[in-house]
Amino acid sequence: MNNNLRIWDANNDYKLHKTLDVVPQEDLFFAEWHPSAPVILAGGVDCVIYVVNAVNGNLMGSFYGHEKDVLCAEFTKHDKFKQIISCSAD
Image (cartoon, rainbow, N blue to C red; front, side, top):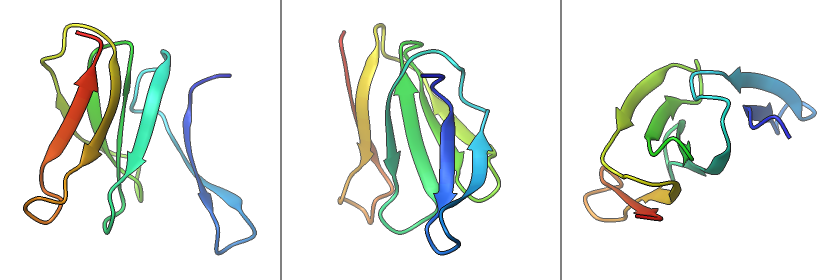
């Protein structure tokens, strides 16, 4: 396993659309799609939550504050999915 984030195009014979290399190649624990936008949350052992544009692969932002592995994160239903909740080993 190389822990790359890859996006496949389900409407185009599942061809590889984009490999997202803006997230470190360390062990990732999760990747979570935004419910209505082309945005992905990802994170893992480096204690950071990354927000990535799934269309162009650009990093939209990073959230710091956890002191141990980030195990999961997701967009909350509150405020039209504009907030993120995360869980860590700390």
